[in-house]
Image 1: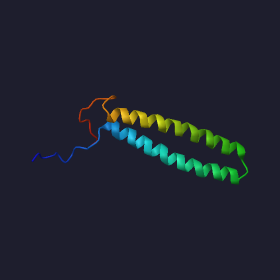
Image 2: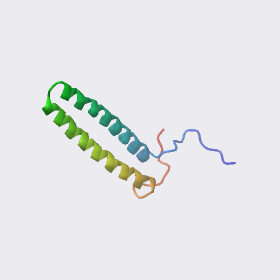
Image 3: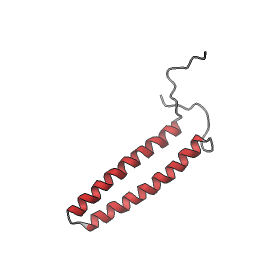
Image 4: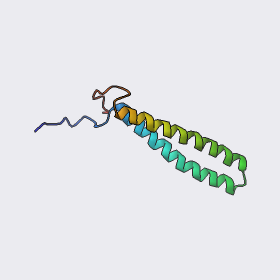
Length: 86
């Protein structure tokens, strides 16, 4: 039986960073949906349009981040060393 060091994180720093970025973008998208509703209820189509613009940009960035994460997990980006979060 092989003993594992308790201080090693199962994800590399790069993998962890992409996952964290994606989580933050996903949470932001949900917040923007509320901001859009609030702007519409306040009768401000300009604000709603801006929030939609920001939403769409983050949605595109989230899709791109997903592609990067897949490449990292497949070993196509970064190195495969045990570069772990402490």
